[in-house]
Image 1: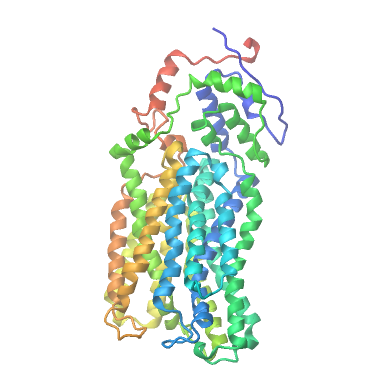
Image 2: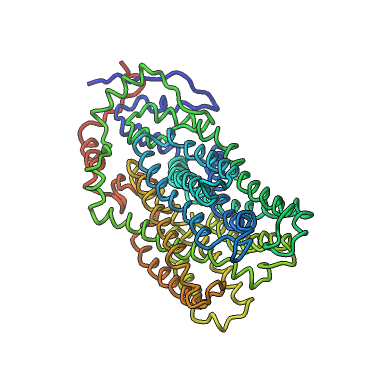
Amino acid sequence: MSQVIHKTAGGNAAFHNFHNDYAHIADPNERRRLALAEIDKAPFGWYHVRAIVVAGIGFFTDAYDLFAVNMITSMLGVVFWHDAKTNPGKIPTKADTAIKVATSSGTVVGQVGFGILADIVGRKRMYGLELILIIFATVAQALSAHSPATSIVGVIVFWRVLMGIGIGGDYPLSSIITSEFATTKWRGAMMGSVFAMQGIGQFAAAMIALIVTAGFKESLVTAKTVAHCDGVCGLAVDKMWRVIVGFGAVPGCVALYYRLTIPETPRYTFDVSRDIMKGGSDIKAYVAGKPEGTPDEITRVKAKQEDAEQLEIPQASYKDFFSHYMQWKNGKVLLGTAGSWFLLDVAFYGLGLNNSIILTQIGYANGANVYKIFYNQAVGNLIITCAGAIPGYWATVATVDTIGRKPIQFMGFTLLTAIFCIIGFAYHHLSGKALLALYVLAQFFFNFGPNATTFIVPGECFPTRYRSSSHGISAASGKVGSIIAQVLIGPLRTRGAPKGSSASPWLNHVMEIYAVFMFAGIFTTMLIPETKRKTLEQLAGEVEGTPEYDPNNLRATMHSKSIDSSVNVISPEKQV
């Protein structure tokens, strides 16, 4: 029996009409497969660069806001605790911890919430909303002030929780959108490039702090210590922290338009919206740099109705979600991604809390006056970031599609276990230079290791209908680990120290605890699949004849039947 095939108008050399390429194919599942192959096999081009930049600017902003807080809190101490009875000019430990943990707490909510919503309402509808929230909360922080009714800590904590929700939303959305638009051959490098913008964000935070410190030098040199920084010095520091915070909104404003106008990912349109014609149209829009595809609406509605009964795509539901992950072969992957991220972030954020100790070892913790104190702090953070973090990020980008995700993560956890064991058990025998070298190595293998791969793998290894939710759950597990590191494990380093002292007599034991977490990460890595140069559909178990093929998958089972019974390819000459 012949079938009516609908063609759509439009298309030229720059804006190819992929739908018409396959309009003669009756089976919508085959049209879907061929259209997605256009993305998977596309040569690396400017539209891929555009996707990396748009997603990467968000991660630049995230990292800037997250890591700038280390320099901001010391400035807050000068401004708002200048008249404190104990340690004047320094922020209390509890206030410092509350401000830092607030962001991580909001991030957990954002990762899970935005991750689930992106699977329900679509990536396009959610993308940009998280950036609006980050921009709004960032500007609000920069304008915050103390009042008789509300302390500065309470106000900043409130805005940083909201900012954290936005930052959390950026994790699953940027990862999934980059993954679903990427060419298979270089998908890991594209996702790694987005994540590597974190290193640039850390660098920018320290650089802006250095610039504003130099700008207010004349005011800062008037005070020898933070306890004596009042008058013009106090006013300068108050302006400095607001400029540093406020600058975090600038790159977000640049990227906002492009995020709001990015087309919906074709995989979401195909698999969740179940609109084959619109998905094909969105592919050509993406390649041409257009906001979205615009097929003829009447033809599109007719085609969607006709395709509905033939589609082999499982529909997302709570029942299907739990039945999918209750199977060990699927559940172990989520356990592997979430567990690895959790274990990583305990040590990654825990080590970050001890930056001041490393800065002391390299002579960048103190200064002859307030200007030198803030100058050395900024330069020290620049050195740490450039020495280990940034090279590690880009080493991953260069090798992740050749070496593979799993070997890099396994190598990273193994070497980090050894590094933390050396720091922990030999801490009192290490010179300052040796400790600095080990710290730089740890930063390098965090980023040329599990810090990058735990972001990449969850964006690839789950089916489209649950990909964003699963990435959000994995990322949220990591942030729970960072909260534990900051609230429970971090304070252990001062155990046994005299009251009011900044000594860290238990630091070696804390490093040993981190070594245990890194060792456990080796075993969670065994639960994740290798995703190198495999299509997202193959990783979801949809491609028959591959090791990942799942015979219990509804789509795969029906596809096998359709090959035997109902595939009907109609040539253009036989169209009715």
